[in-house]
Image 1 (tube, rainbow, N blue to C red):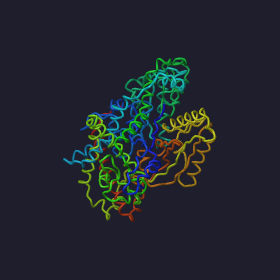
Image 2: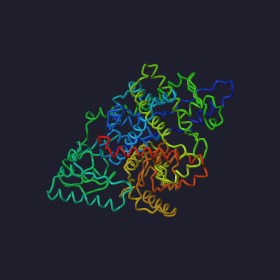
Image 3: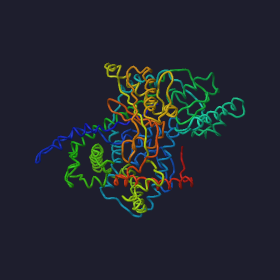
Image 4: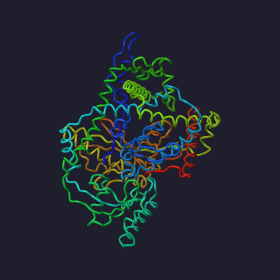
Length: 618
């Protein structure tokens, strides 16, 4: 069960590459920058767009069927949803591997429904033309990758054969398993008493099944909180390696078909399984899986074909980025920040289309500037190409604009209905101290950094081993487990059992976890856990983005670079002491606006829940 990793744009490299453009003397034509890394969303170049669009999550009042692709296209909060919910969960929200993410997905759908309700009160407001055009950029990238570039992807028979041989863990000595299971959810921040009561409940269910008081199928229909409850807990036949290790290990560890597993904890809660049948280990013939492998390789190749196509477009459309380094801050108001042929991006247009890059301490977030400038360059270029191909009204472009209008219209409703006095410089601090702060919180975080061991990854075989170890560790962390032998550490349990009340106790807890990791057999990689201290998750900061929707004990999705993978585990949180920002009126106003809009959305979500208005398919 692999977890897709988000490949972040190497901003520093792009800034370095474009520094020559910014420094070009007046009157000289700047040289073209090198082929850029794509800023297309991961889902757009995943090769799984059709599957995402066909995965209907829910029926939402006023919007109709909402698919996984819809949720990824809309990106309501400005934070990529793939940073908090992995691709597998969007593709199969009813599967075992998605159970720990279902509450997040439901929360995002509720938020969409709330924003849609607010948007319906915005009358006939329309965005500026350049903003409406920008709303189609991600849809254009998606359509270009899926409907144009994907047709160029070639997978040779030799590639299929090599992939088969390189992945013995998938195809050699596999066992086919039929099973049922019962799942009961426990929140990641549940206390030991709550966890104990859930385990006792499942122990009693197991005892009743063994005593013949009910069948396992009846028990699953009555008690399980998994989508499979409707089918008596029955799973489709699968091969080992499909689900998380403890689930399969428990099923294969029983003596005979019909036996029950022990109650065990896994992603999102507690499980009880029943083995129906399991075949002896055998190799899966290449002929049986060649189509699946070819599809997998085509998806993987798509990212590289897309980047190559992007380079060709860049040379043809002649793109320029003038906003490298700190130049954005000092450029003339109407000077072009970037250019594609004769199309210019000025600073006023940039601010109409994108988030203000001024940070809470009033510095310029140059990384955000660069990323958004690159988004405009790539999005405008690809959209122009789609229009030249007669695909300007591609369904992905149209859908992206339809969905993108929802939060913009909702914002207009908020601007009209929220009293300006409540977020004025005089009243902002009072607003921040007179009610719930919504998502504004102070967080205690630990960083988990995974890197190849430079001294032990010189040979190709060592590098491959390191990649597999990193993938194994990341798969575990995606499920909230640090894969340490002989006893893995459930991160939620470690957080709830540790003392983070002081800096000393926090350091001691982190050092204890580090000691366990250091004693584990990771011969080709290094794992370093570091306490980051308490930080305010101010609006539009790193912690606000990375830890969105997480609760203590949960682990963020990865930040991946060629040399390392970084995740964060939320250790503790507390309400932000917002009053201390009263001396910074502009920041207090921004925070007050955020709190007021959060309260307005929460009121709509509460109404939607009371009316049971959303019909979920998982």
